[in-house]
Image (cartoon, rainbow, N blue to C red):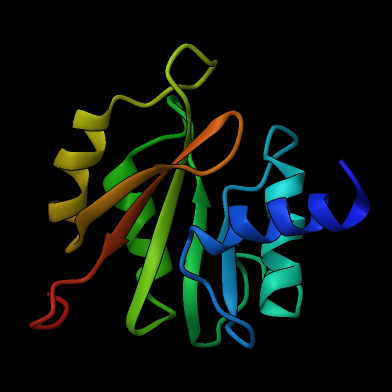
Length: 142
């Protein structure tokens, strides 16, 4: 694959998350097992670096790398809500089935409503990670 085709594939990978140029995206749960290609593709698409979880500004979206054993998912999902703009989404990225740290979809389905979110779709975000799109109810946050 040529450089242009690789770039287009990376942009497509980030584009599946519904992100757009100029958006501010906050990242949670970064560790050495995250998909760096996806991170770079997101940064290329939005035109800036991802902001880390310590930033206290309003963001358009959040990506959250989450693995089984990382703690309480409900508590974790509340953190990104603090800075999330109205209409913003959280992409919960979990290892795919059969990979270390895999999270059962039922765990996400149970945790999301308790955190005031609902899962709207699930995609193959990249080679080793599944992405679940979490949004606040249209009527507003709890």
